[in-house]
Image (cartoon, rainbow over all chains, first blue to last red; front, side):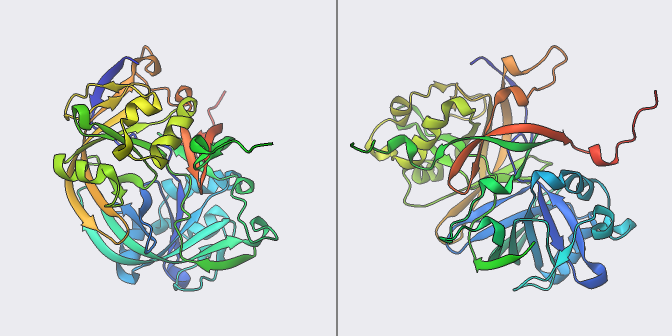
Length: 189
Length: 189
């Protein structure tokens, strides 16, 4: 297709609008972060890039811990709110209506309404300009029991996860195939 | 919700199943990569994490360049194929039916069928275990002319981008709102 050249920008999509929880007790906070991804499989590692002026920045820097919570479409308003208001101005759990839930390997809470929560411990911190990248080990994963079938398989489709594309939130649409479908041999009858 | 604790894993979703093009001429190759994201806004920076045993790894290491191409749902079969077969076994452009198109700031081709292509130059390389993370500056962005309206605004919805969730490809579904909708005041009539 014919294309036009634009200046450099952050137009990578879709990304997860992740609800990142951090801090303990009174200090617990939530920040919505699109600048996240997997950086290594073995051991499982992730990152979040955070502006130093954000309220959560100092909390994560101090504690070295956070939880990445994946957001179902049903809580999209809370996802958006936790990205635009600051924890400096009051308790974001209360304001968003989200519920803190005890984590297993880190001191900060996970979010009860989220079907997947990745507990993370920071391993490295790199200042890149507008953002600082916190690299982290994923210590364990919490999954909603209602999404695990009797064989122990996870039904991610049922989770109705949210995608973020260039300033807009979307639900996921129809399934297009599973990994490897393009080379799968058809079963003989 | 009630959750159960699972061992650490790479369950962050949705991620972009990005078609990463690299290399020049005969050596040009495509690799599908889910381990990508934005790591900095100013300047715009991204990363891709690649296993050293992949054919594209040496190409990117040598040239220090790659292009991240976003995939519409219509080419999902090619996206899957470029993730499961190796460039060692033949020209992946030919095999996938995708078309190389000249880039502006890097020597490797972008992919003509993709509505967004981010031209990238590697700034750093970090070995993390199974994967090596290539951090990169985004040098420019190419967008399909058919997705730019008369006001110069980009219509990402029309692009019909693909999302990757835990081993499955999805189209994007319905719009849930735009950034800031949770705090927007209703317009007075």
